Length: 83
Image (cartoon, rainbow, N blue to C red):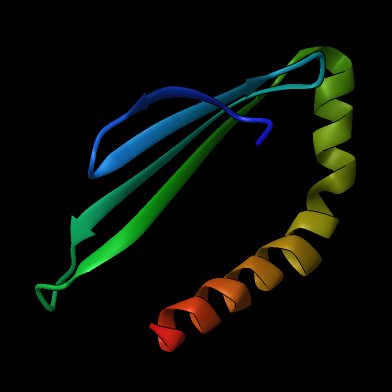
């Protein structure tokens, strides 16, 4: 995995990636939902590095929103329903 562990407990974890384009931190944690069950929550913070990072993020934005995020959501939904 290209993301390096920052910290990890039995209920949450944070991982980081830094390169010439972006600096990214991903947080995963189990939280109690409205129905009392636990659900996995994820937050990803991305900061572009320099003008090239800003340009790169702007160019890939349509791909992320039209292809990557819907595919990830469908994959997570299938995994959730299968359990």
